[in-house]
Image 1 (cartoon, rainbow, N blue to C red):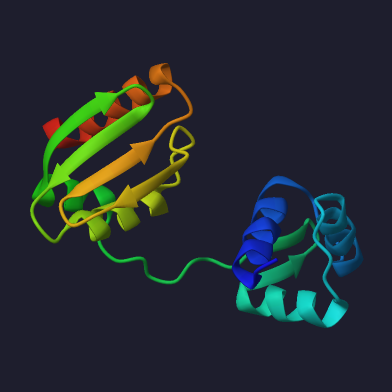
Image 2 (image 1 turned 135 degrees about the vertical axis):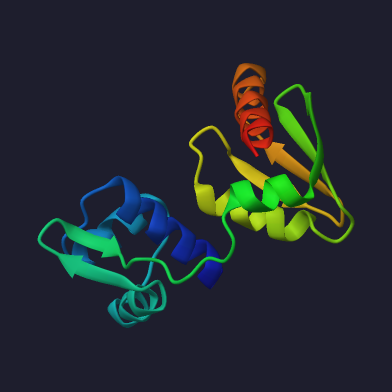
Length: 145
């Protein structure tokens, strides 16, 4: 089990469940087949910038993310196409990664994930209908700019 995978699962748990203590976190991780010592969890909590509140562990406000997605999309996205449950964004050469990172930071619930190359971004949706919603949303952003 890699550190990145474990920390990704911790973030998923903290975002979706009320985790009040490290013991609660360890128990939830065990239920998902992940074992971690208290020392490891403490380090992960620090690395992930989680803070303990009355409602349980929460992420600290993110640090500056960089330019917002609508600004980058207006500047660099050249075309939007869909294929099954995928939406393909064509960008100016060398700009796919920064546009994909900005889209990831938007945390759209319709988007499962993105993969970026040099001038192409693959936006993955769970199904064809959701991909159409994502495409319409993207086109709306481009038309508004």
